Image (cartoon, rainbow, N blue to C red; front, side, top):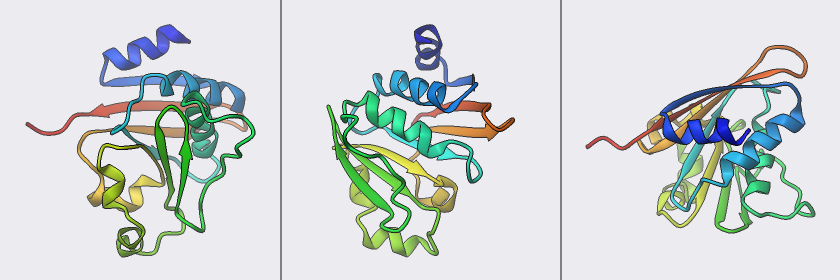
Length: 156
């Protein structure tokens, strides 16, 4: 697993196959160890693809204890967690317009003081920062997921 994460950090593109939800969470925990405040992780995939499962792993890897439930903030859009860094978890599944997130402090999320996780990031593609991770989860079967992680750097 750590060889996989090491190659992820060294390369701008990486693929991983998860055989069950626990493996998805473990991958997220390993990935999280390399995130710092200011990092943005955008999650893509159809309903049930494992975005929240991956988010649970990332949040756990950032030091949020198991007693803190990590659920998608589908109705509030954003939830904050405190681990070794401040974490903002956005879920845009129910978003009707980009104005909704603007009213909730969207722009302030990217001030460099938090790690930002965004489920359903495709709903606000024009509002995403250039420097970010895009992770796409694809359902292969009931338990198997294909994860593709791509790192984007800000334009010079």
